[in-house]
Amino acid sequence: MTDGSLGELEDRLGYHFQDPANLNAALTHSSAAEIAGPRPSERLEFLGDAVLGLVFSDLLIARYPECDEGRLSRYRAALVRTSSFAAKARELRLNECLTLGRGEERTGGREKSSILAAVYEAVMGAIFAESGYEQVKLAVSRHFGEAIDRVGQLATIDSKTELQECLQRTHRTTPAYRVVREEGPDHARWFVVEVLLGEVVLASGEGVSKRRAEQAAALLALEALASSQVDD
Image 1 (cartoon, rainbow, N blue to C red):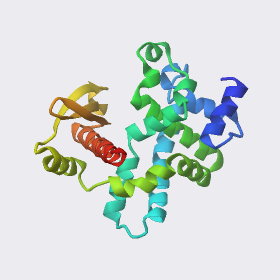
Image 2: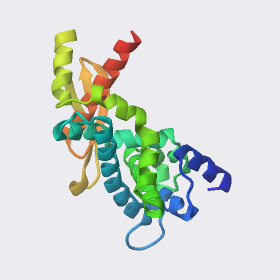
Image 3: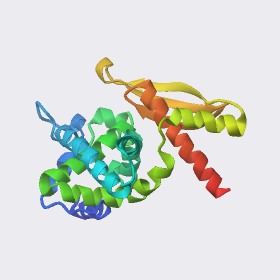
C-alpha cells in the first residue's frame, strides 16, 4: 500500500498509526502470510473481537442508562455481528486495501463477509495494541454512533418472533427461512440464511449456526420493513 492510500485509509478510520506496519499486519489475510505458525492478522482479529465486545458494552451502557442487562445484551448482539462489521469494512473500503493469497483473490475473498468482518476486527485490534482502549472506543463511536442510537428502536427480544408477528398483522402470513450456503470445516461452520415472504427474499443473515443466521436475517428484515414504512 502506498503512503498516499495508507493516509486516506487512516483518514476514513479516524485514526493514524504510529507504525504503519501494524495496519499492514491487520490488512494481510492469513492466506497471504508467508510464515509458519500463528498469523499476525489472526492474532489481531482475536484481540479486536474481545475489545469490540467491551467497547460496545461500554457505549451501550452510556447511551441507554435505563436498560437492564438483558436488553443491553440484545442490543449488543444486534450490533456485534459479522454482517455489521463486514458492512463497515466495505464502507471504510478495507476490502480495497486487503492483501490476499492467490486462492482467496481468485474465489472473491475481497467481498466475503467473513473475511471483511475479520479484517475490521483485526484493524481495531491493531489500534488497541498500539494505542489502547480509548482510541478504539473513539473509532467505534465514529463508525457506529448512529447505529447505536437506532438500536433501541430495532433490537428485540427475539427477532424471529417479532418478524412473524409483524407479517401476520400486515400480510396474514408467516415468513419462511432457507439455508442458501454453508461453508467452513465441521468445527467452524458458517451459515447464510434467507428469510422469505412468499417468494420474495426480505433479507439474508449469517452466523455460526442456522439459528443465529435466521435471527440475523429476521433482524435485517425488520430493519428493512421499518425503513420502508418511514420512506412511505
